[in-house]
Image 1 (tube, rainbow, N blue to C red):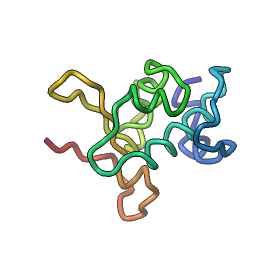
Image 2: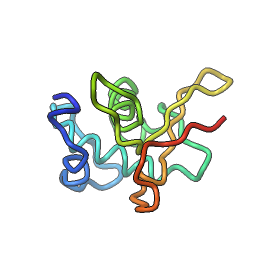
Image 3: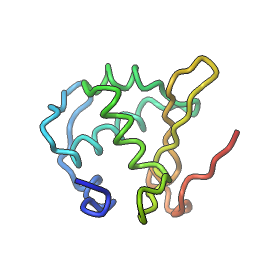
Image 4: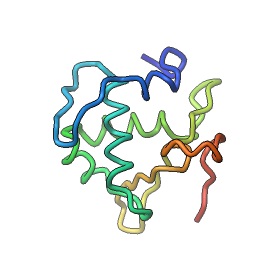
Length: 118
C-alpha cells in the first residue's frame, strides 16, 4: 500500500488498540499507523521519543516505525506530500527521534505540513 492508496483519514479511522496491545506485522498498515501515532502522542512530552523506545512500547520493529512515521511526516513521496503529523530527526548521539506535531495531535490551527526547527 502506498500513500496514494491510504489517505490521511484511513489512519485515524483504523480500529482502536490499547497501549501495550501488540499489533501484528500482518499488513494492516492503517491500524499500525494509527497505533504508532497514538503511542507517539502519549509518550512525546515535547522533546521527542526514540524509535527503540517506541518499538518496545508498540511491539513493532524500528524499521516499521521509521517507514510509518516517514509516511506521516511532511516528506514528499513521488507527487504526494505527507500530512506533517510527525517530525523525524537523528540526534547528536545518532538515535532516531520522533516528535508529534500539532497537526498530528489534531490541532485544527495547524493544517499544513510540519515546520522544521533546529
